[in-house]
Structures are given as structure tokens and as C-alpha cells.
Image 1 (tube, rainbow, N blue to C red):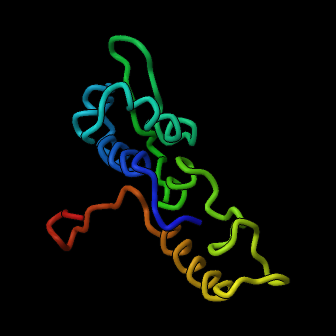
Image 2 (image 1 turned 180 degrees about the vertical axis):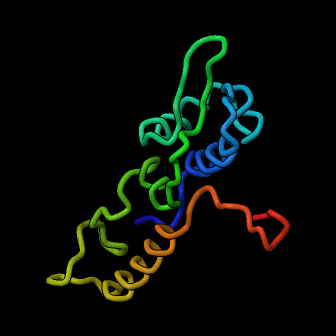
Length: 137
């Protein structure tokens, strides 16, 4: 698991949050809102539509609309955009790391990775407004 994310993941988070109001938005609108280009939006939106969180419609009145049941965690979104986080790759070696042949950081890394994955898996991308904070997130 890497400790940095692709810029496309940041754009995907912002796009999904932008679509959270349920309105259909075209590529130009999304690009402006998330500070990208209309040409790049297709690459940003592909994992979101592939995961079933966003629906895409072609044509003059088309665009992207969030699915009503879309409620992915940050971890789910990261994995949709970047692929599985558990790739077995050792953080110190260019090979796999396991309990039979552990690296010097194996135990600490397994514990830290577990905590990170758990935290990201529990945090939704689209956070609900806090009614005790005036509706702000």
C-alpha cells in the first residue's frame, strides 16, 4: 500500500461530493467545480460509473448523476480509482513480505496498515451535514 494517492483520486472525491446534491451535471460543469478540464473528466468519472455510484447519460441533456444509494467509503473510492490497497508488496523490498520471511518493519507495517484501512473504510466520501453544527460538515 502506498502512502500517497493519485491526483485523479482527489478529483474523484471532489466530483462525487459535487454530485451529491442529485443534480445532473455535464463534464464542463464538473470540470469547473473540481478544477480540472472537461477532457480529463471522463477519466475521473470512469471509476465512479464503473462502481455504480454515478450514472452517465449521453446527449444534449446528458451528463453525470449520482445514484441515490451511492455511499462509498473513502477506502472503496481509493480502490475503485487506484486498485486494491492490499497488493502484498513489502514496504522495504521489491518482493512480497510475509510472516515466514518478514522485513524489519513487517509487524509495525501490518498494524499501521490495518488501522489506516479501518479508518478509511469507516469514513464516507460524502459526509452528511452535522445538524448540531448548523448543517456544516
